[in-house]
Amino acid sequence: MSHPIPNVLTIAGSDSGGGAGIQADLKTFSALGAYGASVITALTAQNTHGVSAVHAPEAAFVTAQLDAVFGDIRFDAVKIGMLANAGIVRAVASALRRYRPKYVVLDTVMISKNQHALLDPEAVGALRDELLPLAGLVTPNLPEAAALLGEPEAADEAAMLRQGEALRVLGAQAVLMKGGHLPAPDSPDWFVAATGAQRFGGPRVAVPHTHGTGCTLSAAIAALVAQRGDWASAIAEAKTYLLDALRESVRLQVGSGTGPLHH
Ligand code: PLP
Image (cartoon, rainbow, N blue to C red):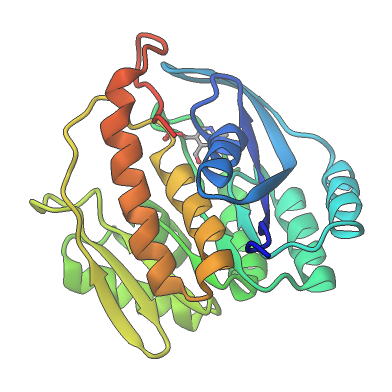
């Protein structure tokens, strides 16, 4: 018999333009051989120029979606993206405590590239205190790590490692610190786990279309950890997938702003 197809859930916001959030996650799951389900935490009115409005449902409706899917479907991995506010953060944390999925990737989404808030600034504490301890892997970029720790943004790889370790001590099993904001020739990411740290470098791809890169990476890690069973292999393969999706983005003609990736 061929290998069973893994079931992967994304808990995230919708991007009407199709480039980030739920839409990027489901395309990534399909491309990487997983079946995707989605719990939608927020609707965004959005195109390649940015987010113009956000509508979040009542937290109870997020809980209803979570109960519907977890009550019926066995998930091999879960990816969490945009959560909008503290009520939704708590609803998701409560469901994870009830259903205990094996692999949880927490992408600490806070603001869009055009500076629209995707998480209320007052909800950062709830994300840190309630969700971080339930995550198998948390994937902050440098501004997000700084906000979670209440510290200045890491300016070099030594500071990235220190902050990655600090986030791990707060309760995540492992941390992937994404160093794309550093002025390094390659784009250094540091994986920090209880067993040690590992550097994942990667070429910078000079394309204008980078909308949804963070969403795509965390979704790819979730789809792959369900199949490989370890974080380091999933991260290495997810980075390769992201590089290909960035390179292929030049074939798309989607909007006149920062375009999406091709999956
Ligand atoms: N919209 C949604 C729903 C998202 O989840 C995210 C990022 O996680 C974004 C937009 C931001 O996209 P970007 O900053 O890559 O343009």
